[in-house]
Image (cartoon, rainbow, N blue to C red; front, side):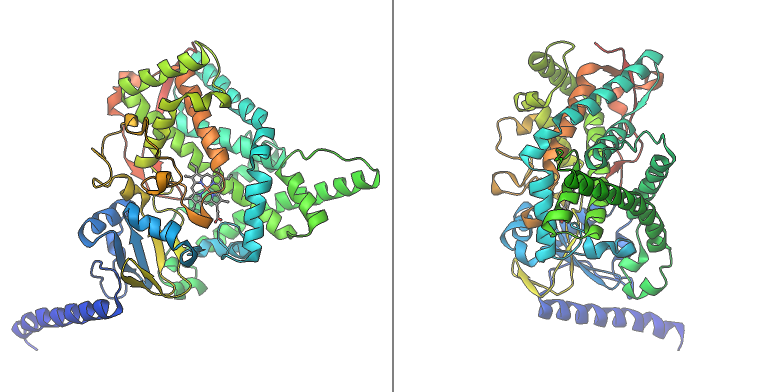
Length: 501
Ligand code: HEM
């Protein structure tokens, strides 16, 4: 075939493919979406920041958009009304998770509250989370621990202030959350890494957080599962095993202790989540040891990075704006007194601090695409047909910046939330701010996350003045983001605390 014939036939072939695909899409009533290349579909369009590239594509194709990612049909939701359909009105059809391959390491997906399908076993795990771990009563009971951990963070920052050195804000918040969760769950502080076991735990835990954010070819081409070409599942399994071995031995030890106490007729108060789980294991039998073990692992993974990155984003936004910082400081002084500590009981009287947190969640949601869901059967959604096995992503990053919903969406303006009924659980039923998801799979850790974000942020703002190294200007703080397990700052915030008030 000569070159001229190729030039003539190529556009013809592409035209035929285009028409065939359009007819196929119309016939199947799939939501509109971009054209995909053979084999990879639209994978090449995701780039390093899928939340942003998908938002851009949705601008062209609509708030319910479908696209092929490798072999997977993905549906992206990018408006508040469409999010409400998926997370509330038709929640029953979208309540199951699309499971990343790495999560099947050590059979984690089969016993996990985050990943297993809606079923009686999942309901029981969910009940344990909501009623036994994050209930008001349980939250009250560990209020002193949260207070101590935040105070410890302030003391650590004060020490650094005395040396005139910079603090990595995200790291300080992460360490505080890790320390809190490990004391809440196990009554052991793994954050200090002092013992060999704690140091190994910390190392494996960091490995899990890092691997969970790496794009994995198996998730788009499931037939690669046998090969695990990037060895993500294998490496994840090695990290899971180390942590699970550690927590498993703690379960054994606590069960032994509880049985001994019972025999001696002594009843002790439950100190931590492990005590609660061991009680359920021994008396209610509604939980297996493997489920208890994996549940503890999940509390660490779900609760640390998400919460600490929110504090880092909020501090970055507050430091960049002298107006916001001074208004937040004035409110804190008025409510807690000059030099006073920020306490949980103060949070309801700190509407401006709460507004900063909401505005941070709007612009920098820790889980920008939530935790993807899937369909177990074909579903009608907003006049389209979503096929069985589609992956559903709710782009809360795009919803938070939708100009149809928010005035000047690119401006960080906490004032927009003052006097408004928008909360972070789908507020007022409009679903414009849903960083914790919604419906039956909504994050059960909100009571803990919300308390800790307000406490850490309020304390960092109230207890210190801040400057940047080398006289850099606050308004120049870099706000670029990095997609991973949670949405992180591309360049961590380093700021120099000035001696406490
Ligand atoms: C689920 C966000 C903190 C435990 C989720 C989901 C999101 C989320 C988006 C999926 C919701 C859905 O599918 O609708 C966040 C954010 C946090 C945070 C933004 C902090 C800023 C925590 C904490 C814990 C936790 C502190 C516990 C220590 C869980 C669990 C699930 C979950 C167990 C799975 C629920 C289920 O599938 O039934 N979270 N989370 N999260 N989160 Fe959180």
